[in-house]
Image 1 (cartoon, rainbow, N blue to C red):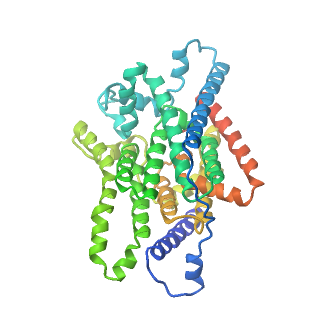
Image 2 (spheres, rainbow, N blue to C red):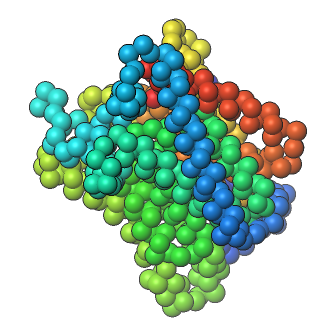
Length: 430
């Protein structure tokens, strides 16, 4: 109960602070006092830059090379810890861990391909990653290899979008460091597996980039693709709406009775934001086409994984409790890393409150709330690999306190190695 109360106070307090900053930035005049002055005070170091094509190519090449190195290291780990690995097929089969099986099943024959006791269990998983595997497999003729190739490609493309995005408000050094932190975060190993983390990362990164560029059409399209990758993709509606409010000073225009101009900005710009939920809509249609129920995936989450919706405070409280009371392997495989992940992203949110744009803050706040709001939150560490602004704020912190950079990188890299090895040893790294 104590953890639930404390986390609720911190997160809801941050949300209130963010709302006040957004309203102020979009034109609301607040009475001057110490509180409002504190809210409106902006501590950002604004050193924006425009990376060259050669720099972007270097970022992509380095990211792709990193993923290839990780795959080669995984081969070493697999062959070292198993006496039965003799072929390339055996190596690829080691990637068929946990949810990877379901993505490959969908890529093989759609949602009706796999049935367990009359239940279409794969409907609990969003389809975009699997659909792309099936399409690109026309070239490679091996679903597992195709999936690994796409994961590495999407991760590398996401790094390019993130670099371009962060460079719009920060230095190249800060942007590059943020990408490094994201890449060596312990559970970022999933960016190179048969999971859809890289798919979600590139679609969200692209959408956030085009939101920041105020290219609302592409922001909406990539947002819809993110919502077709995972439910949290729909959260991109929030940073899009926030950036629209702030950039066009909507509240100020309404206060000045510029109703016609606001309406024009709405239908020419903001309507694209409503494209984002279309991705979820396509997924719901898939559910209906197979079962006759639009929200069948929610029934599966509750029935099979006992993973219904829960107040985020209770979810965080349960994770902390499990970290201290659980016995055996799952304590170190699931609950302790989840506890550390939550501490990291919440601390990052607090640190970024006066050091970032409203679109980043609002996205991170709702991302934390939604991803911790489950009855059985066993994949929080994996989900937090896509908590994009948290890594940016960590980089900003390192820019101010340079002695922390090698320490943070080393600690994360060690954690990456530990959980990377444990994943291929079939431990519960979810």
